[in-house]
Length: 429
Image (cartoon, rainbow, N blue to C red; front, side, top):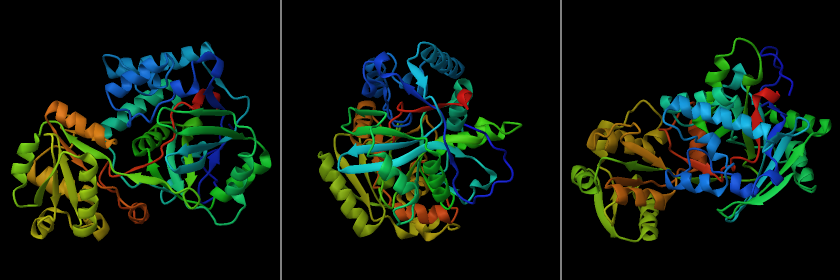
């Protein structure tokens, strides 16, 4: 990939650049599905981590979540593993730079998008729209891992709203998917994955012209995006760190699914949580059925606004109809109404800070995407799972366009790209 300078950019939107993808050599691994992983922050540890590590000795989780005694040892181990796998041709680069069409199909969803190296130019403000805050310690860890490996190991998920016409990026994608894919595999979650390359100069020019008019919402990967920006700022001259690996999905054609991210309060038992709530919320015990509890949560959310389900003691407890006076006293009033009424805002401002006095740090709060896993861990360790209701994508985009960020881990967009299908080594740029 050529690396143009940081000045003199003529476009006002996204610039997605071809790169030489680093991919598994199928003959050198058990199967492509056995070496893939969910994104690093979705892997349920330790059970999910152990499952992936034993699925294949070359599973990508050994790079994105290396296991060692110290952080420095983990990052050093990942760099050594990546170097060894390339020397042994477990991973090999494609012969020429390309953009990649990536398709996921399953669970009633068809998603297609473009994987490439996105320019991190000074104009990204207003072009790339974050919608969540980040935690500095996670950014630091991801930055150390990327420095050590000199690689983007997994693509971020970005969404944009493409033009309705058949040309541009949409036309290129529609034509490319009629050809034979570079790879095809089905992962344990039942999703089928296919990947194609785009190398034709005319196709690349059509994609570039289309994306130059677009802005993108960060659907998944805020911490890695912040990491990209940090690492770029560390560089004294233009180079490969001016780009970061992303998957761009046109949600006008392929809408994403938005799910909630649940909270696990490690040190707060359910009984103590309920006692502290008092009459700040109306509390209703729902029984022991998770599906019924989630149905009740959706109904309460539609009817009364903010609502949560607490779990961890063998039952489910619905918190609904918060005291309006308490909301007025505890929720900051310097943000738009759409932000002030978010469940995540009320959870953090009212419940965590004011009622439960739970610090927002890894020692006290875990963030878990899978609902049943959050409940299991709360029951196993005597904590409290706070089950959330998902936010509408339009609300997310509306706030992002105003430059207003939501509380961290407010949303889970998907399906997320499988990690391990294509990597970007900065040494190849």
